[in-house]
Length: 258
Image 1: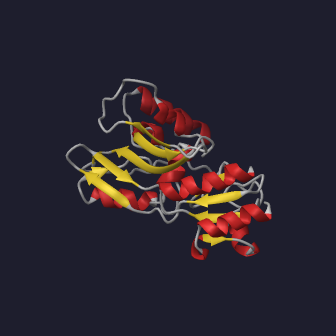
Image 2 (image 1 turned 180 degrees about the vertical axis):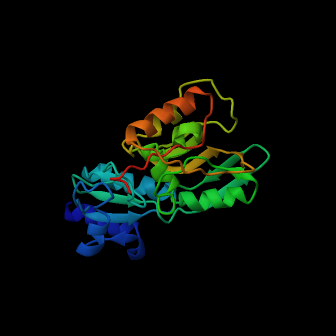
Image 3 (image 1 turned 90 degrees about the vertical axis):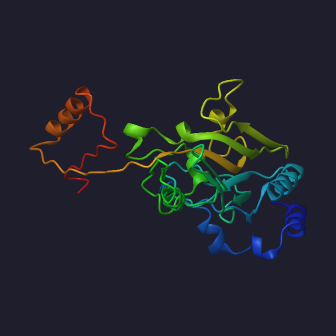
């Protein structure tokens, strides 16, 4: 990154929201859970809203610097790795749940909210957010949207894309896009929401997410069944589904997993 780009970053963001020159901190933002290597960015900016993202994109565009959005860095696919250096844009400080609406089964949230925290908060209202990545105590809603996260409950409820009604995102030109709808039935126009979900931040940085909720299940039961072989267990899964039974999840634990 050029000295001019660094100077612009220092002018635009206070020191407590800008990481520069600290190799240890930069390395922490250069890794995730994918074991694909360490790719430290040249700078980290902790944004607090869409205006911050717009200011950052203006600097990055002017100086031709790569931008990579990051949050909890818990992903398994390397989507948050700064493979070409540049600026890592962290949304970890955008951690507010903006609205929980039991009337129309909707929650609005910033991208830095921890998934498990959001699930616990909506359950206080008798509601349920089904997607459950294995890292739900660490991962964020923004990361889930970027990676279209799933989890064991995807068998019955589907993955993140099925629950994203709308998004607010800042694209590299600095424009703010508001896509999607609040209602469950919204079928008019291009489905730009689905395009952004799973794009790993390559199309823009999400600053607000509108999610669909379900009524909270009244009862949940768990069963452990032992089989003589992995093959027998796999055949049992097929028989369960063929019988018309759709559990919220089915997990197979073989000797290697155990």
